[in-house]
Image 1 (cartoon, rainbow, N blue to C red):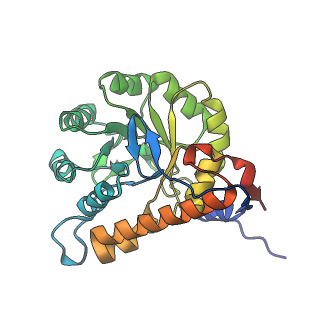
Image 2: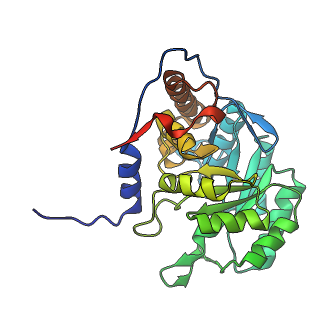
Length: 298
């Protein structure tokens, strides 16, 4: 019998998520409500947008994919994220009216990091943050579209957090150790992610949630998880394992490319409907009630 090694973190992640089953608890259950409170704001569901970068205009449409999914976010009343872009690009996102968190790359040009964070704050962003899972590449510090990245120390992250009045998000946390550091530095939220499997054999982000949640007991740090989130069942499992919310990502791209704003709205509402259905079938009336008591791992 031959054995094939699997180093692709995305395949490992998919197998892990599919190995979690859900049992029913129907008697005395009610129709669930998916609304959540998150960092002082009310949203219609614990589903969030990904921090995408560099999406062009699909199928000859006027607006970029980034603008289109931001417009969908506003219509859905969920939290929006955007990634690497210049300030002129962020202006277009801000103009959509979506509550948006700007995730800044860990540029070697520290002045650019601070300028982009300050610019987002001046425009009324919901929050700002940093993408720490893009620091390194195979040759050392990464280079992203011609921009060199840099190592980020606790002291540097603390200085960004202290420089703003906005909630600070750290994206790319995949260990309890980093989660605790983020909490101690004053971050208000972390995004548990392996950035679409950049590192071989990376732990499935969802598998890290119980350990991270345990490590953050006594803090008010919010936990978001991404990578492979494609359905209401995925969101349900994420919440049951310890997340406060989950971000869809590449799963929405076909809908975005084909039908723009309407495509994203319909896709996310489908995720919401399935989440509500599973919550109702397992005896949880609201997202904050969900725990792992209805999960079963193969």
